[in-house]
Image (tube, rainbow, N blue to C red; front, side, top):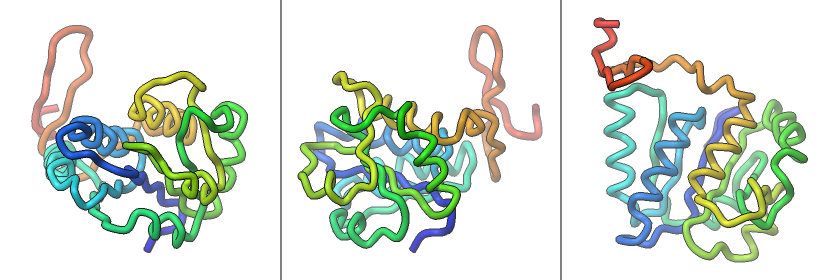
Length: 180
């Protein structure tokens, strides 16, 4: 079940051992750049734990789910489906249409982790390329979300934070919210 205007990222496929770090980074990027939740394959439990831990410490809301039936999730999604692929239409050409569709209904963003079957391409309302050059799926997701939200996600306020990163020119400063 999805909410109106919700952005959900679906990590399609996960190869344990090989994709652990990348799947985790898909979830962290989805959270940090404005998505409401991420759905991982059922065999990505460690990535789920890591993203939930970050959400607990650095704030939310953000939800992480595991799903055995990713194909059914795509087929049964009641909203707009965007598949990020280097073989798709240029993001800069379709971003305004996708943004307009998202004002009306929820958005499912599919990020592949292994070879994506052709039926995913067919099920998508848009197959979107963030360049047509090989690159990281995490980079593609980051660029797509930034364009979807027109940069507003960078100023997001977080709820229930245990830790806050204070921006500064050099060094690292992480404090409790009360010590800002």
